[in-house]
Image (cartoon, rainbow, N blue to C red):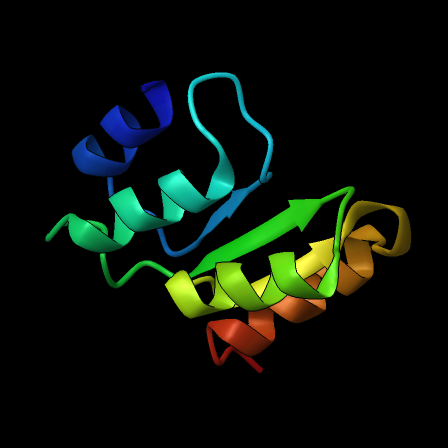
Length: 89
């Protein structure tokens, strides 16, 4: 709930979120963000401990722009992925 309120009140270049959250799962969050006029164009990157093929496919089908596995990502790789998604050199 707090994340959605902030996304509606402020302007973000990108949203990085997990698939497992207290109020709802990542699929529900992606759907809600993409259905909202104010947040529908904000790129979403999933940073999760679980990356089963079906989870990645479903998240991307719903509108996630990236799906990264926490155990395989470093801050440098995360920054690289964000720059790629935002088309920043």
